[in-house]
Image 1: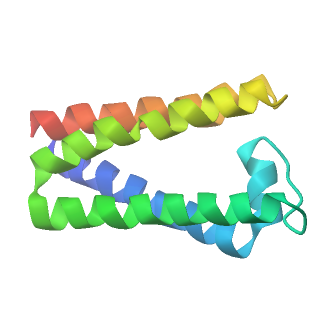
Image 2 (image 1 turned 90 degrees about the horizontal axis):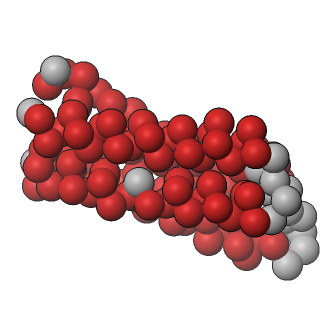
Length: 123
């Protein structure tokens, strides 16, 4: 179980880094994949950059917490970070996005992050 807990945490942290990169360097496709399309050349460009910075930072912080503070701190980090995809679920739903994307991507991500937290707490 220890290997699974660490692996899932690292994969989720790296996934956040990937999402951050994508929103910073490929904002149009990233926004469409998020579930609420936005024009990166318009006013939404700043918000897409903010999302990229937020996601990338969460990935870096998650890796740093795991390496320097340990598994218990990473478990608490994951528990708190689960609020982000839960919020993203609501954002997609409130802005006319597809329910399949809201639940199938964002809510499912929140569930996986919570599973990661539970596994880390059990290590």
